[in-house]
Image (cartoon, rainbow, N blue to C red; front, side):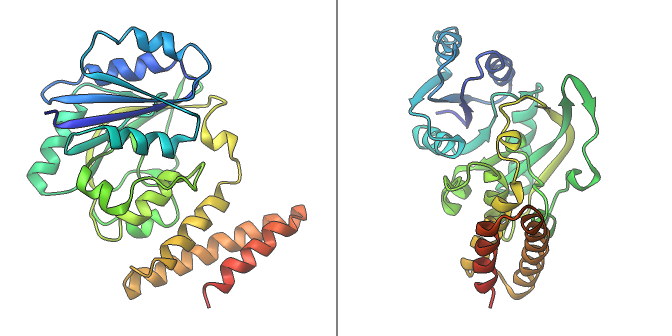
Length: 274
């Protein structure tokens, strides 16, 4: 049986998908399977995937378009390995990633780790903003304000993924931010300082481009975390402070643009804090 199930969701990225799949297939030193969740693609994705039909490590799951959360969850359900790695179809791994992460989890007794990454935006290498610099260990407080883990950089145990319930399909964007909020209160995150991931950006189909009002999703994620009643006193206080900060910023924008429905929604969130 494979040690690692590599989960690759994709939708209409025929031009980018081979780069991602080839980088996964180039991994050595570990046994793995690749589950490609084709989320209702209408481009040439089917023809691209036919090139990999002869590789027993690659399986394709054909889905009706339902979003990245449903695609990832469906692929995990079809997989079998005790470890899970996620690779977005516009990203690329460097050789040695899976082996280094497997050794970290085993050596340190962790259930999740990530690697450093290189950012490419519109074909040019850029430095990430200071607040996105990767950290290891207890990163819960940092994760309340920014998404501190990139899905394509992660290796985690299947047991942890199942314990927290996987990705929440309520979130068309910021789904990773919401998942890490459910993981980091109770689990330290290992960090390999070598950039084993190349993260590409700037293309029009990125979720951050399609859903510009990201703070609405982050507010919803923080409210769900509080509603779960699973935080200790200190972590709850930190979460309330982060939620109030994001509410204030979001409400200011809503007032400026006359978005009364969003203001009413914020009032409901605030009422739940009392």
